[in-house]
Image (cartoon, rainbow, N blue to C red; front, side, top):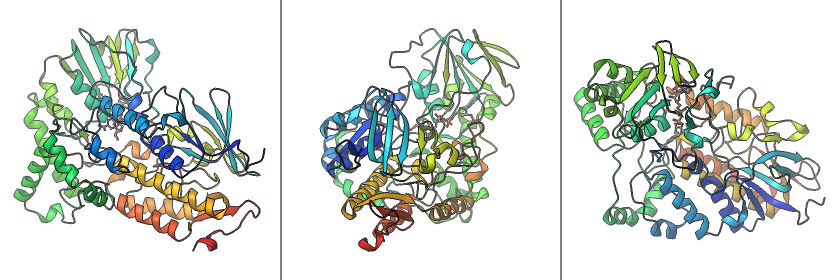
Length: 549
Ligand code: N01
């Protein structure tokens, strides 16, 4: 096959969620011929699968939405501060229709394999419908939290009732009325589903392995006046967000919590509790995430709130997070969470004291006996950051698989490319700020960079780009140096792959901040893609950089 023939597309995009849709938009606007594949039968990605009761995003709608179109921003009226999964689905479907993106997506089609053809510098992509698509670039926009991780508990398949993972929630209505429901897992998904189901079923039993910090969401409906206030300054707000650490329009403070008096701290923390958003407590002082004593002041404040809310002191004690610093596992949002445990129809099972022995047809057996259940919900998280990529049989130079390359921990240059896999771009991949910043803004920044890069390569006649192995080593070392200055390594979180048995423990997100990272990516591109190897068709190792700078 001639690599310049019409049979070879410019890019294959995988996924039709926030990232996939934006990649389709930008790449087709730039005149590239693309094909996108989506395993679901509709638009939405994460939100297509996460439709469990109570599912909603934990960033404000103003931040967790596309910024590329002022018209879109103006015409979409968010009904609540934190949109539900259903509202996000409506939004993403609107985006797909408004910008005519749907026609580029082949639904119900899973990408199973992608192999790089070194002679032609193209990817050969095999899909579940048995077809093969050839493209110059391969862009898996597969999300960082898209592969559910069921727990390893003996007997799981024997349960006689209905069971669902929050990340693969069925599209039919699940009836909880009169049912005894069990929830395993108390991360963001579990906290939401627990709040939604308490009082809606006969009895709710929560199986908690690790107590987490849950701060108030303060969700509320939005009035036309509130929307107008944001729209009046929206462009400015977005511009500021692009430069900040978390990709939202709140600058990171420099003051130490330890320099403040207890009264000053209390005032700040009460304010964060009352007017909170997800990052509120982390934004109180500059050293909450880097100094254990500073961090403990927040941790103790939240434990105090739990003690005030939960009437039974023994239950309250079980709900108080200990053993890892605040913020190093993602804190959760919930307006009614702790109050749920004051209900007679809710039971908390602390798995540290009474571990699960097995699942049986009637329910869950712990070392204290049987909990009879009709419905079992697994809110047990994801094979995060790498799971969706390594589940595709990706083969790069010399047929090496991505799974093999990442067997000791994922490595990328800037979270954009991994050396030995030319023309493969990751979106919010390992080594980028991804889940530690505003995800929708990170997606836009990545896709904008990839599009710019592909346009530059097209201009230069460059057919192949790969990450330089040394640049990649240096970047991953930098990622580790940055996290080593923080408290993040003191928690067993999905950020380090601790929730997946056998997965290498490597901290994968880049903690240097969204703004800093954006500048680094822009500088690399402006300097002619330093740290990348570019080659033209005829000359395998041409330095195309000289033509650009
Ligand atoms: O998953 P998690 P998640 N036996 O990994 C427990 C985003 N998100 O789906 O901590 C018993 O955080 C596990 O216990 P432990 C957000 O970024 C956002 O809730 O490992 N328990 C933990 O309690 C979030 O961080 C939103 O000890 C077991 C829970 O299951 C990310 O997705 C909503 C177990 C898993 O928590 C993931 O959140 C939802 C076992 N064998 C998700 N295995 C919003 O925007 C695991 N657990 C609000």
